[in-house]
Length: 561
Image (tube, rainbow, N blue to C red; front, top):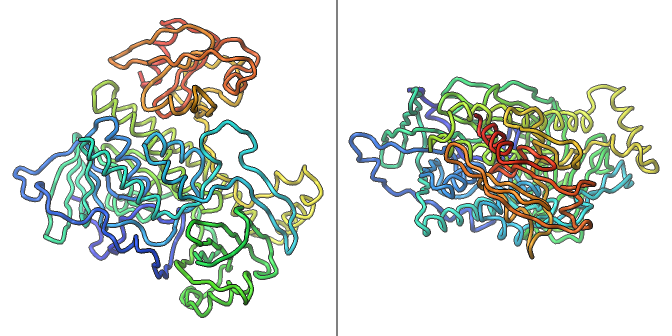
């Protein structure tokens, strides 16, 4: 078996660390939640099993991505085991910005409500150049969505609510388990299964998994044990990230500064979180003494220069990091599948880390379910890698462009950037060129082999390969009715369900007036429309009208047939 580094830190498998970062951390937790084991170590029957136990799916890492995958599979009645070397949620805020799409996925998983209730909702941002505001923006200018554009929520709360959902599923009789203090030390790969050696406080044991999903973070021991690596860029700059507890009257907006007076020649970012916690990012430059900069006596003067001497604050969590925009070449390696930071890393400006990780699991789990049930060939899992590599490349492209704009690499680049910022204050045409972090939106799987026909007379915003847009529907919202299985959205026409290879696409029938948002987003000028929707709420095909044969052919294609 391929063996990991036994010296790897106790938190080494914890997923969800701020994406794309190389960190030196200083942290002083002030939240009691850190002190509570949420999935404490308990001896399992697998530790005494002979022959060794075998599980359909094992997930490594109980961060946001690993928990999302586990919940998704359990809701589809796939038994799943999560292994984590820790026994509680992450310390420090880490990921804090969760997008509308991420929340829509969490809602389908039954965990979004407490997140939205606790989180700081926002959709507006401001950009400053020096000491003046050059423009503001709105990320969700249209109405008719259940979820906000973004919430800010500390990662430890996100994980807590996901663990609560796991416990609720257990109470319902679902086969889902989290084993704390179970560290995967070695992995053996085979054609039909994966063998794991697991270290616990009571010694080691082995088990087999039909499928292994690695959600073990940016430093993924799984990736290292399999001898896999990243391709991409590491940017030559350092950023201080600080979570600060303070009372402040800043509005609930994303504020980004280029060349602010309190951090001359660099950049800064300010975000509000729950519980009076504020996220501050300060660019430091490349040639620095990280150990020196990590000392509180050097951090505090920087923060006072930004906030003012009269603002009382307390440091909760601090880190210095460099940007990394990289990914694995493939996210599937036989029966081992990689998701989240273990598969790809991007810089944090744009909130593309945890958000893209949940889109990974959203794409993967329905495909794995079909393969496990024998309703689709294993090759369907190759489309997971193809589609999510495509998504990762889009994120990396946007993140790299943001990083290049925030940290120009030449005098000419800086002159051009500053000219764009100056122009944007009075000229709308320049504002799209300002890049303080293009914020996370789901990619469109253009060109996927799973895509069926797309009749172009229908609205571009709902083209094949895109995620179904939400809209008010039957005293609720459309996405509450769609997801988790194949469905046919039939607007102003009668359609019957279709079945292929044991999979049925059920029908959601809609009759809508011309002025309804569903009509605007899905009909445009057409009178009727038929949409085939995948379990991850992605549009697989669409027509003005369709018969059973046409729908069956498209369903088969969407299943990889």
